[in-house]
Image (tube, rainbow over all chains, first blue to last red; front, side):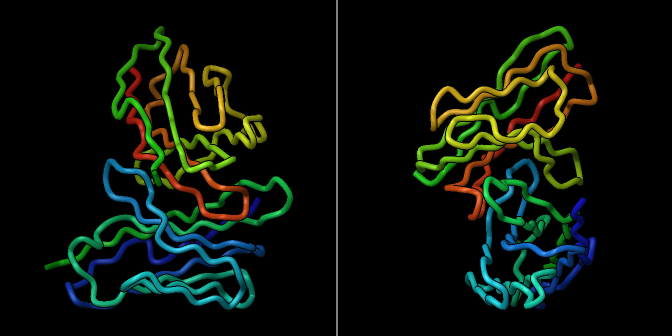
Length: 113
Length: 112
């Protein structure tokens, strides 16, 4: 089956630093999604990417859909304490009726004030 | 309304109980999902409803029974669960299969 390798598994950074995390896949995806999950809550969609090469920003967050369709990265600039949480990438290989999302294992982000 | 609402937020049930989890969205989304999430793991897909019809069942045991009464509601009926079924159960919805899903807050289920 499809697998997503997400790295790093965890990060401890100083407030104000930039953060970068990425996902790679053994197969092609047509959609890449980035979610953030805080303890006791459901995942929140941060950025959705639908086209190879697409670069999209949402405030301090920037994500790119790799040109090979097998990878994506998420950058967070000037981190703040409320960025703490687990970040998941997810890929979808859309075809007719293809609703399945493949999730990465998550990157746990800790921000030291 | 841009939310997926799940009730209850917490549920403790015995192995002989019958209970139901409820999910509601009013965004006009045509696909609704149930996921199970264990601690420190990503969500795992259980069921997908598309246009109120079950389109995916990821080999989930029959003690979990989904129901989609209408396009805004999704239920998950629970019966004779095991302690290992304790997890966060997440509902999600999406406009269709091409776009990102919106997740609810989840129901934290504990089976005793």
